[in-house]
Image 1 (tube, helix red, strand yellow):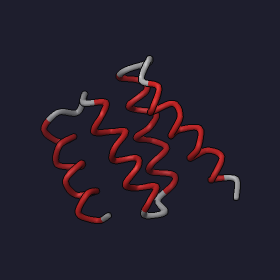
Image 2 (cartoon, helix red, strand yellow):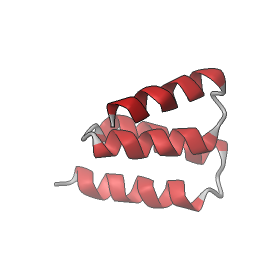
Image 3 (cartoon, helix red, strand yellow):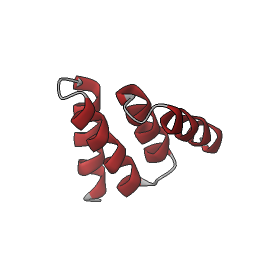
Image 4 (tube, one colour):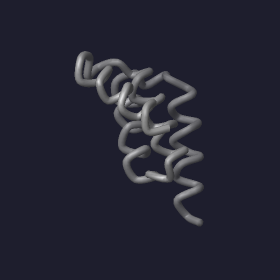
Length: 68
């Protein structure tokens, strides 16, 4: 998980507008129990690509998990 987080961060450094990288980083962060940071990357993915259904789905799941 930590290696994935590192790699996605590097990808975003190279291309900050890459919505898929933000969504995937959110997934890795969520797996690492970093929910708040994951949510911020899902939000960025949605901002960059408003019709990105997987980012919306994962964002909703992260918000749901945050309540527990």
